Image (cartoon, rainbow, N blue to C red; front, side, top):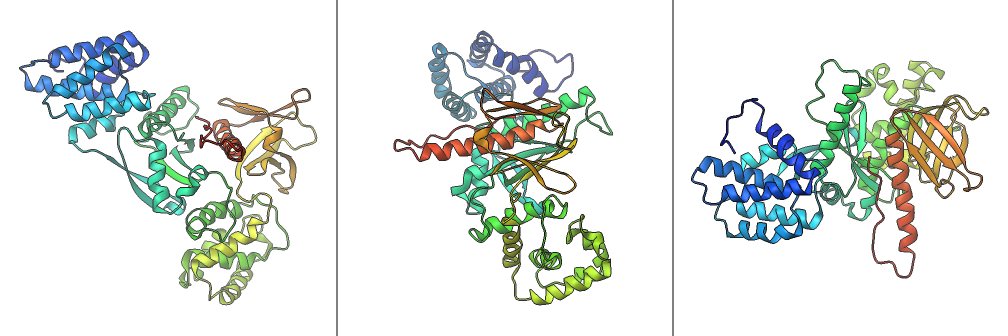
Amino acid sequence: MGDSPNKDQISDFELANNCVLEPSMRSRHMREEVYCQLIKQLTHNPDKTSEDRGWQLLVHMSSTVIPGSDLVEECELFMKGSLHRMAAPCLDRFQTTKRNGYRQYPPHQKEYELLRSNERTIKFDVVLPFNERQSVEVETTSRVFDIKQQLLTKFDLVDAAMEYGLFFALRDRVLGAYDGDYFMDALCHVERFWTKLAHSGRVSQASPEPPPEPHVFFMKKIWVNAEPGQHRMADSMFHFPQELPNYLRGFHKFSNVDLARMAAYIYRGQFGEDLAGMINFHENINALIPRSHAKTKSVDEWRKAVETNLKLTKDLSPDKAKVEFLKTIWAWPTYGSVFFEVKQRMMKTMPKHLLLAVNPNGVLLLDPESKDILANYEYGKIPNWAFDEFSFTLVVGESSNATKIFFETSVGHNIDDVVMSYVAWTMNTHIKKRPKYAGVTVGESSC
């Protein structure tokens, strides 16, 4: 509160979090003592600066943890009876924490800046597929689901809430955000996750500090109800831009597909009637033809074939071109998959390197060269799985004859997140079919 000199010259943010808030989160006795001391020092405090700083700390405490039931009523009476300008927002956050539960982490530095600025919300740019951006407003008490609802409402996708997810990314690391978490907790979690990796030496970075801020992504996560043509906005904003990279990377197995026609759909879907991009076709070929097939013809042959198909598709609008592209891929068993490159050493009949695909059909193992499906494990046949920082283990089969399949990967947490999301969706679907369904949603995986 500024009553004693700060000899260590550390920021208020670090001082409050490290010396007050984190210990209070760990110990019930500590937080009750902190609340008692704050209320004592804020009662008839003649120093205006000290009082203001004390109320700021009490606001952050109220946003994070509350005392035991014996002190809750006393704290609320104190806040209701105070005339200080921060008393009302402090009471609001206190009651929200009492209603929704404690935070997992102490307040983020942005929350301290928010309180000093007297604003109610923090603006974040959420990255959509194709790098389009949508601004959202986050309050200290906002849950991940609340931010999802802002975006789902914007794109008329409110009825598909379970099918979409928020993700935080720092360089090459991506973490899914659990709907029930406070948004700012999810932000703190990914920053601490990165710090842990950096200290362990398992990430390469030019400087010892992590990037200043994670990127927030909003994407289709569970590919159910994803038949092309059923929802124009979903097809245009999510299905097409998320499926296109998988197609161009050659992750799908396909035959008897007119690649030049598909390239025309891709081009029309992104540029419409503007044919300027065809002038430098040699620079854009990898954005139109799968890399696995690009060398089957010369660049000039591909250009002529694509130009012919562009003439044949001149009446297609960008949205219709995207749907036509998706309709072709929709028939493939790997449509809507999230692909992971993994290694395995247990199954002698399979190659060492595999593509692991997760989609509504289950967990698929693909040959990375031919893209043949070597195994398909439905979710009903996966009783358990586990992951750590270097692996993902899948348990398949009945309990008495269950088999453990060990995969080497550094993204086991991502595989767990997607698998758990499909399992949760499957369970909720079955629950809703029961006569006494009460509208209770099964939880997701937190990573």
